Length: 386
Image 1: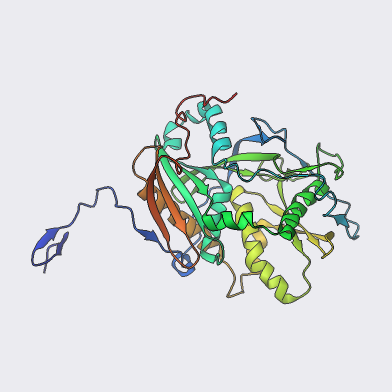
Image 2: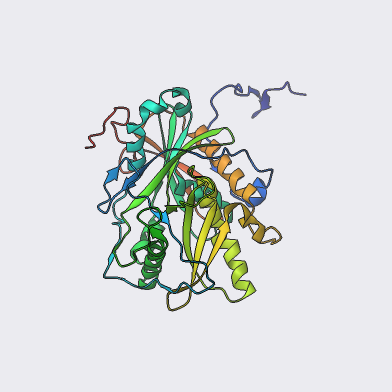
């Protein structure tokens, strides 16, 4: 019998590596849902640390000027009859998707509020900083069958930064986006215009331009398992009538979907679309998603509220449904994988995590352009921002 801590090689006994050595990067991370079906991991209720706004020219403002206020139509049982095609394409200013912003806006907020965070410097040094949308993709990965992703990761002063990279397939798909899909994207923003006012108690004004440069973003702190998180996500509106005025519990997510007419259509909706709605809203701590269901002519025929914490009930007994525990356990496993892989503290060094449906998450290592995404002056109190 060989002593513990040894392994037999080619005709000789080799001493195994000491356990306290930094772990070698695992070559890959499996994504099979069955591997992550344990108990729901600890997830700390997200708390808002601050916010920022982006204006019609996509310029940053460290305030809530872009926040809109939930103002639904009277609930008298009538069809809202919102025309989601109104203003397309004449009153539509879409954001330039060729501009890859990365973490820039969130990093600017971080630099401006570093003093607040430095009261507990060890917390930020061990944290993961990213966008909510990137975490959403991680949550849905075990059930995703169509779209892959890439996440670039760099460590600086102990903090791990994660920023999405557009895959070649996603770029090709975006550039070849059919006119109908572009119009459907517009309809989602138009719905928000019908449901939101510029001030509390105000009335929506759908006559103006739909400009997708404008955004209000919440910055939140949370923890998944033993991973401290600081992330930001775009918020559609706040509800002045919410039971608690404390963000994020006063926020509302607005969505559109096509009308459903059969049990099969509803089943597909619960399995696929509701999963993404749940992941997005649960991460941010948004309690409700309000959906406008549109007919083929583009008019909203009905409104339905989906409480985030009740979404799983729609698929609980569906053997082809999704499980929140699987989503969160996989996300926690990925964050551990990333933390253990990105050891070197160097903003110019990038580990690129890649995933395609049906396969594991793999990782490759790069330096500088085009993959580096952290500004070289991140450690200073200014990055030349004005």
